[in-house]
Length: 81
Image (cartoon, rainbow, N blue to C red; front, side, top):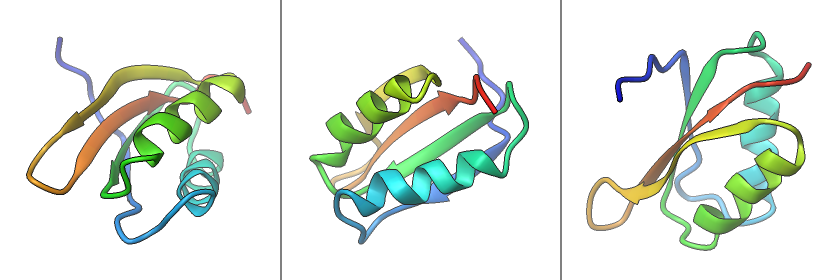
């Protein structure tokens, strides 16, 4: 499955709850239907941010997965204004 990523937020170095806050603020600047790539190095954020995004009404397009030894990425589609 190929998904077009419209924007990206790099939250490496941040810890919860700032990981969610920064991701949410970035999504708020994007049009509905656009996809945000989120990169984190904070393992708890790989559980907390996707769950919080879904609770906000957004769609998790790809579950968090490792992209190297220290970082994860996942995709979220903005569903609501």
